[in-house]
Each structure stands twice: as structure tokens, then as C-alpha cells.
Image (tube, rainbow, N blue to C red):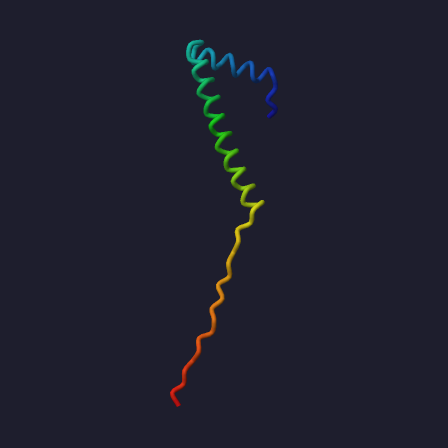
Length: 73
């Protein structure tokens, strides 16, 4: 189903009828701030992933020295 300009106008008119002209700006502001917070959060995650790819973690191998076995013979 394609969302065209006519569909958006119908949705806007129905929302205006249901919520009234006083509530719509409040809903728009809430949706906008929510989307901004979500975008900022996902941007932070994306930069964290990029940092890990650019700087691989160093893995230190632990090599144990062989222990001397003392014989009492």
C-alpha cells in the first residue's frame, strides 16, 4: 500500500477531528522529541561500533613457562 499525499491529508484530517486543534501541536512536539532522542541514541551506538572496528582490541597470549620437575632418585 503506497502512502501518497492524499493518504497523509486524510490521516491529518482524521487526527484533527479526533484530538482537536489544541492537542495536535503537543502530540507533534512529543513525537519530534522522541524521534530526536532515538536518533541520538542510535548515532551513539553506531559510533561505538565504528570505534571497535577501527581499533581492534589487543589480545595478550599468556604463555606459561614449563615447570621443572625435581626427581628425588
